[in-house]
Length: 324
Image (cartoon, rainbow, N blue to C red):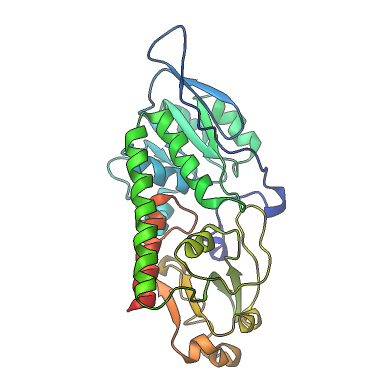
């Protein structure tokens, strides 16, 4: 994976994302053969029967790993452990965790050797990989993104994973705390006179002298969170149907106007594409938010495609940046 793609969730291609239904909210079904078994229905509509609440769990994507850790289930296997620890600090991994390979191509043999009770994947994982992993352990799929309902999709995923791991009470508390964080953040921003403030969020990368910008527009999880906080997105371009992401360059930033500009990058990615890559760029220096010092780099390690823990972390960071 090249450095410019560090923040992408692993997908086959935006246009090729399989948009399947979100996980059902139905309670686990008891199997007639045993009182200890349970059945959950995943985002594919597939019913998956487990011998009981899963304890040895493997996660193939960082958002599901984060949800597992948040629910008190430390996974035995994780795709790209080093990357997770750098880019998703909201729910740190502890203990001995086996790296199962890349997020796009996890090692089936490595997963099989761990003898997991359950594998949790997203619908961004290729069908061929899902089919292979299903042969070595029960597997549930969560929907990675849905630009029509990102926050509800995120909580659906937490609830589905909770049902499969017997951590429903923890999930209920976690989601309630997240909702309270949104309400508190909205109140704090309003008290600071920032209700209705325009905030544009993006990330980006640099290749040579060229800086590419990826706006998180209407339909992205970040913009949905900002809207709940009482903020307004000045982005007018359309994003993809899954993640609500668009593409532009420094010229595209001129369309934001008088707004705050917030972004996340990571020191592991060798430089800041905005502060470093555009510091001598005349267009960048002419932008109102640059002139008015309304550019906010949020802390490293906030996973923009994460779960309730990452979004709680994001809310804290954004509110702090806008009110300090």
